[in-house]
Length: 127
Image 1: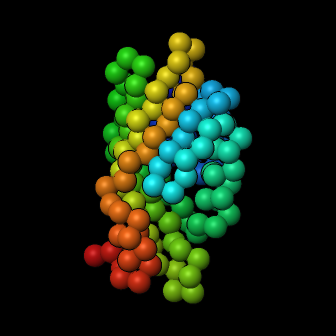
Image 2 (image 1 turned 120 degrees about the vertical axis):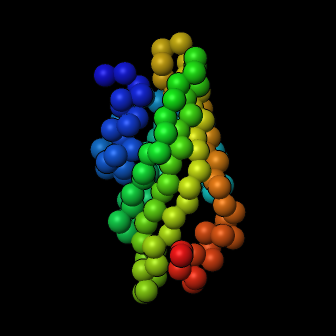
């Protein structure tokens, strides 16, 4: 299975049973919250999402590869563990850089909103 199909499948079942073998051991990851290097920390981040987010879902809207770069467009949503369990959603895109072995060496997420916008969703529902 090629990396595009693997990623499509991973997005579909996120955060369960992710394919960590497509990442280089020293993969660089960055988003608005985390910034680190290493597949072990990437696995920890996914475990954090599985543990503290309720009903997490990752909708993949688009995926394309151009040379050694893959761009995905997505929406991540979940219910916050607050007593009223608001549904939170972040849309954005990822840029994945591949090495010669087609392993992901860099995964950078960009959000279409600010961290403050995400915080506001906890108190003011998405319309």
